[in-house]
Length: 129
Image 1 (tube, rainbow, N blue to C red):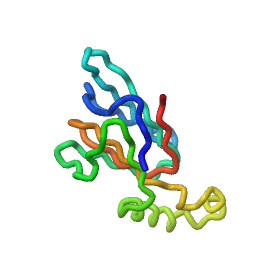
Image 2: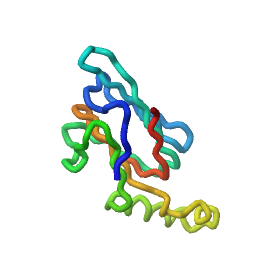
Image 3: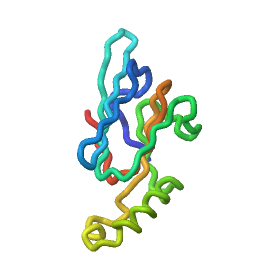
Image 4: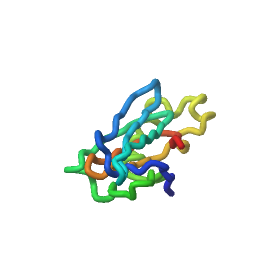
């Protein structure tokens, strides 16, 4: 499954900027068009459990994605690892189970062309339009 981005992630002038806000990760990025105009994009991940940023020099081949998409995986080794740790620490709690337990978490990936890629484990992803 993929989420569509209105602002492409390629041709970033300054690369993505990652900001933590409470339990969320905000990813701001820019894209320089053919006319030199800079547009901005923003993606918000809520109920963040983990993220890792790969520089373009060591970004895994499977993270090379189209510039207008966020890949969403319901199953991956990274997701299983993080959900396993979460389940041991707090996932067993009644409140967490009422929120959907570990089934609510997904593995999201965004590719930023020459800058790198980002893997995120979170419950929700919002793309600003």
